Length: 299
Length: 203
Image (spheres, rainbow over the protein chains, first blue to last red):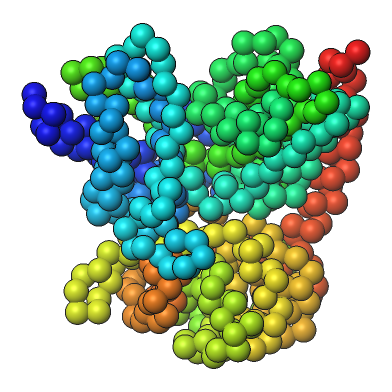
């Protein structure tokens, strides 16, 4: 395969995958929603879950994006330092968004700031957003695709706490976001919490936490315990589907963390809406690919 | 129970017996109207190029497929976060005479006052269910302020039994989200105390 052929092949696959993720939710999200729907008893909550289910079926049947807000596209990369198409990757991903936008179709969600106009192409300065992790000694490339919608992006908050506020302060921060902005997003939410030193570190952790599957746990036992405590606790608040009350509030709580400066605790919250359009695709050096976020991929 | 369907043009009397928590549907004309359109009407003092008096607006930015010759297909259309329009909505209701506002999540005291004083209601369409909503659209009949791009153009559609619409603010000064918030905040304080006992990791 020549380099040009390889670029075309990868662009084509990523474009089709991005379009596909707008139409079918990942397996873990579908399973969790079915589980939560089964626990509701109130007619209103049940009716909302039924509408959600019907919507996902119609999206398949009519081959349309399941939510009108197909987001600003974000890619979280774990790219092997020896992946042969590393130099071409930004161009490939940008082109794939343009293609997916036409083919899916996706909504035009890229507004140039300050000049304040919609480019009409779904790409603009810094959109799609690329977040790079370069992995030494590997020659493959893992890509998490994410449709960052307005509704799920709006609750995002980050703050640097004083150590005296402790993890109790982290708890307060997360809960406050849930009962203010969270209920107007699209509950049940997947909650990503990031902990580190400064705001950008915490914020990136909080978003990467949303790339982790529902039901996975932080490897640190205390962090995993806090995930569980927050999940149980936020569920007890009972936001329900659409914030209109119900048995639960969240699809899960995922925490990602790094060490902190002794003087600060940076904390951030990011949420995924119930329509959490996350995809995971891995290319090997020959551009064979595997998808583990979705079974029954049919593009 | 019979399906409660509102038909445009909507009169103030049509809304009298509707209360928060009710589920209703809309038949008639529905115009998408969101962030910049609200700002243009209220802050820029530009008249809304669509007459929504006794009509309905939807806080939404759809995906549209152009069919040529100024014809468009509604691919998907679901509600966006209504709270973003809170800053403008009370005055918007007064200015335009709109009767039905559809969106996602709650709105605040301003909208509650606007709904109570000028006789309008706010409803939630289950968000993320944009294909269900699109199948209630019969056709797109008008597009204004197209300079705002696909999400923010004022798309007017003919809709049939558009819903389910869950009434969140009625004409009687009730706001279901504000009522729920009181409950949520009370439970939150209990949850906070419970979790704090378990996370004293700094010793």
